Length: 225
Ligand code: AMP
Image 1 (cartoon, rainbow, N blue to C red):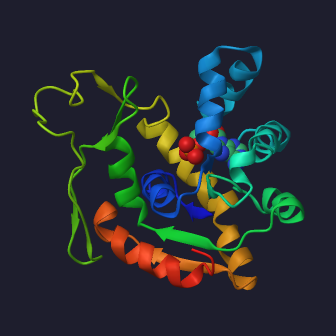
Image 2: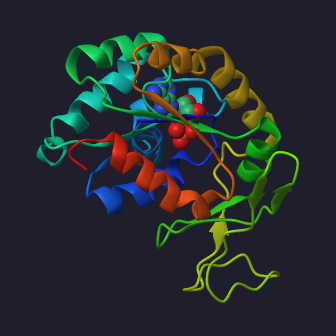
């Protein structure tokens, strides 16, 4: 499971790790966005929470998770991204799918905010990019922008020419609410999993440039990887 503030890089890392380890990603944020995009009544209820940067009620997210984990592709393992987000969710998960490893992705809030404000994606090809240029010598963080090939600064387009857009919850107000929610409700999971002896801290330095190091650290920790 990847733990960390919104914008710390859980989605980017889990996409790369999923390919390297041949595991599916179970990402509750993506599942919730898909329900919202469907325009159903359930989607409208979920949007009311996510638009405010709040967590959706456990019953709704657990229903989605249960359905997803019931599919056969998760039988040999999976990468959890965005779940659990509270100790009570972790307690439920522990009963039906105990975790082997929790990677706590650490990135200072000011860089998280810059990355969230710079995040853009393509609704056509699903590509995710980031125009933020984060450089903090003191914290040892250097994350250059992640841009599509052939990027032209004046045109926010992916390599196939589709317009890149920001997520509706990546605005300053909603980001600050999401970060407050993270610190209050999700960060306690760091000590919860540390006490179980299954948590490793991973300090972000160069974003995707960290991948080889992160991957080799994980291969040592996951016995069957
Ligand atoms: P994410 O893409 O992981 O940042 O999630 C986007 C939004 O979906 C969050 O701000 C929450 O409103 C909702 N969400 C995602 N995962 C959960 C979860 N495990 N529990 C409750 N709400 C969630």
